[in-house]
Amino acid sequence: MQLFRKFIGIIYTIYAFAIFLSFMFLILPLIVIASLFGKIKGGNFIYKLCKLWSRFVLLMLGMYHKNIFESPHETAQPYVFVFNHISYIDIPVILRSVQNQHFRVLGKAEMAKIPIFGFIYRSAAVLVERGDAEKRAKSVAQLKSVLQKGISVVIAPEGTFNMTHQPLKSFYDGAFKIAIETETPIKPMLFLDTYDRLHYESIFSLTPGKSRTIFLEEIPVAGLTLDDVDMLKEKVYNAMETALIRYKASWIKSA
Image 1: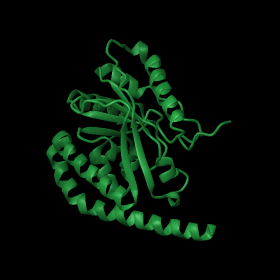
Image 2: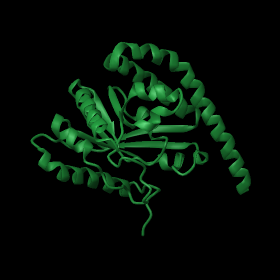
Image 3: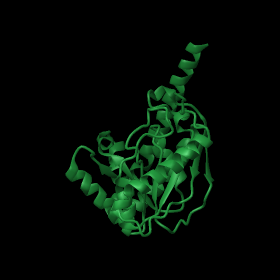
Image 4: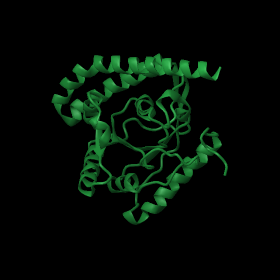
């Protein structure tokens, strides 16, 4: 029975990649054209295409997505969205979650090296190389510029996958400094099911099923200074950790 399940898992993963690639090639010419219209106008259209791509792909893979708003937010208001990073499927779930407003994702520069997909990724994301201080500063400047144009940003404050089996791993300062310096409120969102849909250890762990994003209450930054970064970071961390425990996130293991 276990061997049969592995075989089904491999077939399902191959099917998933076929769906992913076919729709990617379908929208690629439109993304190339949109990229000629600049980072803002062209970028906004590229995100609309990517949102359509994520909706189609998740549906075809039998992943039924639902947004749950513990606290609604104004779609006309730019936010620094922060999320728990736990799976390779987090990106399509971000695109499916943040609807009815423009945004940009802070992404890893190495992802842009993937053939074809890398072009789409470069066109849509603000890239960061954490090992290069100069390039990292340039990425931060780009995010600030985006926020000043009324466009939200999406950042994983953990930086990379949480493999600790704790609700969250420790946060970097970047998202909180940006929020304070641009006076942009933080909106935490939690991905409860991406760990179960695609485990970070193997692409063959992909499974259909539910996908839920929980939007928590926004956290204002008005009046804060850079001296308050640690306090703000702890406040956001505690809010997200408490909610993940309350929703019984499946990766949390007691010591």
